[in-house]
Image 1 (spheres, protein in one colour):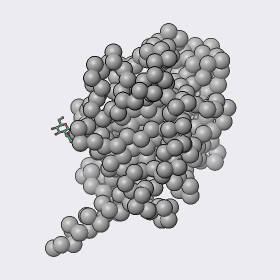
Image 2 (spheres, protein in one colour):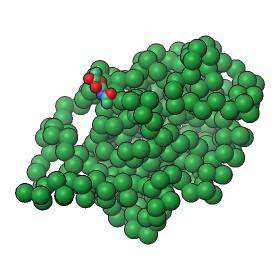
Image 3 (cartoon, rainbow, N blue to C red):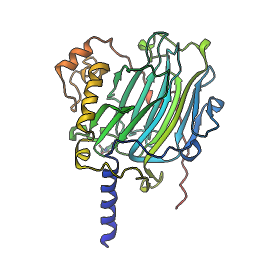
Image 4 (cartoon, rainbow, N blue to C red):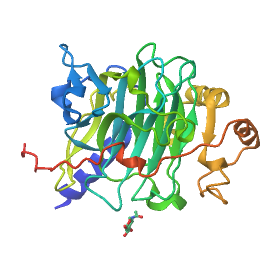
Length: 335
Ligand SMILES: *[C@@H]1O[C@H](CO)[C@@H](O)[C@H](O)[C@H]1NC(C)=O
């Protein structure tokens, strides 16, 4: 029966085509109940009347978080986020994908993390990936932004395919990670859930833990809306492909995108962003990595640019994102 094999290959090529399109326009926005579940924080997680906007808050009692109902293997994942204003030192907001609750020793992860700051200083944003339990090698980058993320909603997205990962802020690609052979399993390759959390990162988040969360200003509220989960949902038990949402993937399927992930125009936007706003990259951190990890491409200009920023401290066990959460997974109903 050639059907099975051929079918499988066709599914694979559809996936590669579908998720090689960075355009997030016209992708379906899910209501909270359609796509997500409450993870922790009780009343600190609040779904507004529209069913699509979620407030997560950090108070002295708890942070809060939610998680996608499904696991996904590749796709485009996005949220519009408005961060809390004023004094937010020690506050961490994370928008990330992980399978840490299913694969405790060899999990995959890709992260957006937002690190609060003292009044008058800007939020910082950080991206990172882990693959197959590569927690001993953090691949963090840190950036400033060209706007105040507590003033308005902005869209933070990640496109994850078999061969590359692109992080976007609004329409600007800020980081591209290509899978290289030498990375081996360090490139995320197993199905992951999408999470959004807010929590207390006092021990490390702001100037290496110098400035802590001050609960005088609590609750700290991070607002999420326009939640997009556009990928291939996977059965949590069998880890086989269940259903792929390919709507909206139609017109931008061109060979150029497939090979490079981003267009020339987007690449030039990305380089411009990085020249202006990149503040830290693991590739240049000689304290952590005497020899940079193999995928690093060292550029003299970039090294020069990053020399001006303070060394960065990273929290231990940050991949738990404030709370060790285990969900019991039940087999999804067969369609
Ligand atoms: C992932 O890690 C396991 C051990 O934890 C190893 O057996 C496996 O080969 C690794 N996979 C990849 C793709 O590197």
